Amino acid sequence: MKRPLAMIWAEGFLDRVAAERLAKELGLRIEGAVKDAGGIDRFWELLDKYNKAAEQCGLVFALADHDGVDCAGPKLAAKLRSRHRDLILRLSVAELESWLMADHESLGEYLRVSPSKFPEEPDKVKDPKRTLVDLAAKSSKPAIRAGMAPKAGHSTNRGPEYTLIMEQFVRQYWMPFRAAERSPSLKRAIVALRAASA
Amino acid sequence: MRRIPRQASEPMRFTSLKLKSWKNFKEVDIPLAERVFIIGPNASGKSNFLEVFRFLHDLTTEGGGLAKAVSLREGMSKLRSLHATVNSAVEITVGMKEPSGATWKYQLVFDTPSTTSTDVLIKVETVERDGNTLLTRPSRDDEADPDRLRQTAIEQVAANKDFRQVAELFRSIRFMNLVPQLIREGQSSPQQFPGQDPLGRDLLEQIRQCKRGLRSSRLKAIERVLRSVVPNFEELRLETDSRGRPHLAVGFKHWRTNAVRQRESQFSDGTLRLIAMLWALQEDAGPLLLEEPEWSLHTGILERLAAFIARMQREGSGRQVFITTHSERVLADAGIAPEELLLILPARRGGSEIQPAARYPVVEKAMRSGLTAAEAAQPLTRVETMRLFGEPA
Image (spheres, rainbow over the protein chains, first blue to last red):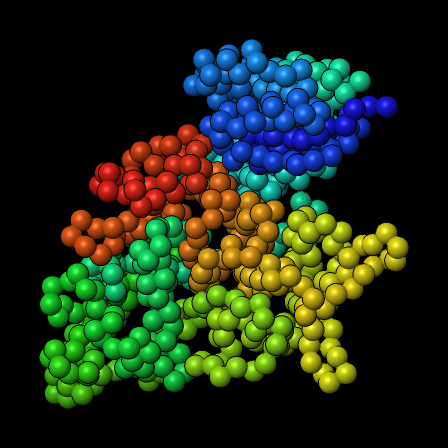
């Protein structure tokens, strides 16, 4: 009998959706709250509370992007020292998007972009979100281009429907095990979740 | 992404706005995007900003006109900025763009002839198309008969022939501040202007009057959204009761029976507001003004609302949308560009000023790097930090 997850605590909206998807893929039941911090600062701010909660209520899966860690360096080191063994803290390298891009086949089909254009080692891509948006801008599907890429003259790093388009990908098409073959950091996360829930 | 969306033709929309002495804004000069979020502290003038567009609507609607639009707002003394020089005239100038690329400009300056007078007279009214002047007032006729200055050309069918598109754009502006209980009651309302009830009393009737094919495709689009955020949601339909009154019916998947049905009287306030909003976003109509749509909406909707609006604009009518909001959840979508975000902040000499977030270099750079409007811009509208904030570039 696998141990269920008590809670999920994620940095942002898409991290939360991906954490849920990972739990589902591994057959882990989620008993309590699934929540995101809406930003990296708040994620670290409240991580202590989740650490304490893990001691009381069991496995807590915490997921954030690695790129926010530099600014949180010393704080993070202190937090990791006191981490309870039931708090599974994973950081995608450098952003969640590298985990998603690692599933070339599904994402290529979903975005209508040739999988050959995707990075072979997504964990080594410096700015995965930008790489993903640039790839989506080459899509053969107008709805993908319009939704994923920023509008002309707009100073954002993604398009207006990025959230919806990527949420649907994670929920319905992303295959984490296949992605883990190209993303060592995702593989480590899966191994950690498996070990903790065994 | 199950179906290929219809690429809607982009309707005529507003591209810029200039104001002088309007309510609590002494001076405004801003560009306007297709999707506009307006944020600011309480009582800073978010509604006063939307009020400009409601004024343009009232100017051109049947039974409207300049005198009516001013009197609906309790006269010039309530319209004019308290912070303007005494008795300065009110000015509204809007830039517009047609789908064909043609650009328009409409300017209206009006005032009372004396401090005690309740008369409202036009000081300037001009219309330009692609930079060519089509109308300049006061004209010679106006000088010969000053009473003519009580009515704008844009409100008169006989006078607005050459710029009917502009009058139609103004008339098509719709304001929404839905009251779920009134949608449920569905009674005909004592409306100032028919078919334009901002409180949503005519929603069910509007849905009923829509052509069958179009209605079902719009209800299907709403279904897709509801399915992604309401657990066990199955279908949305329009039904008619034995007395011929229209009702919305929702079916839920249920473990005991195939589907459990509910009518709008049983919907939650949030569900009803969401349905009404999603319907309006698909209408082939002019600019839509949404006042704090977050009220009673579930978090699951709020965090996707900005993207839903963009999607409905792209797949549906393409109508321009103005949204005032306080919701951090709505603004946490990094797909919102600083060019789409208007910040209302207190002005140095009293009153408020409104600027696109893109004009504040720190905010623009932060958002370009991936911070959201909730992280990079909204904290500036907190009362305690506002005064410390720099001037726009």
